[in-house]
Length: 240
Image 1 (cartoon, rainbow, N blue to C red):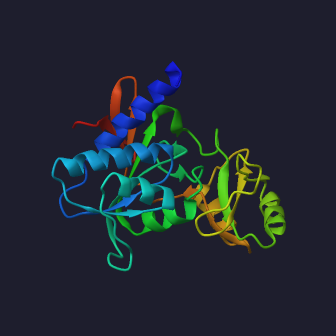
Image 2: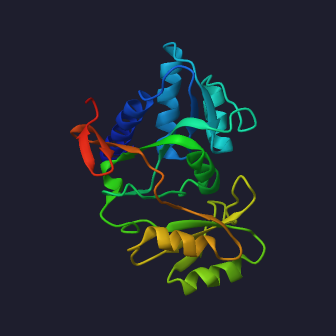
């Protein structure tokens, strides 16, 4: 790991530890997916070893496997249809609105189900993920059914996207935990994320998109100076 990657990892880990402090005894906790969510799972496991008791609902098979390996007890929506708090990462966070792009880890549908069922959504990122407008740096992942994905991709292109079918390192098409494909959509600009989210999700063949609008309650941002908590337009040190 080079020095820049090590610094980013340290920032994410610090943000994850700050977010994990929101968990209290008896909570049902949504567990996100992706490289940043790994730090959250590890932080939650550390708090559990210190005596905290909670149940987790993971958003992917990968997160479930890691949580189980660390001894975190899991539950399901069948037993707990409402979640107290979800901790997850994001690919981009829009300043002020806290709207997100998510799904580069490949679990956007399950992540949105978990986030939508949560009383609070806490996002952990390093400072490079903050943007003035969504799609500054990231594509918008769109989960689509496998049948006719080419036609669905054409409909997304009609909305102004440059569309790429997500692949695996082995050269095959990426398959989500629900058996769907992901189309990565490059938009030049997204002035109205809510309107675009609605347009995308109305398309035949689309299951869900990686625009998370109006769901976030708090963001923990790690950088060289420490961790900052961002709540809507309020930005304060995380220890306040």
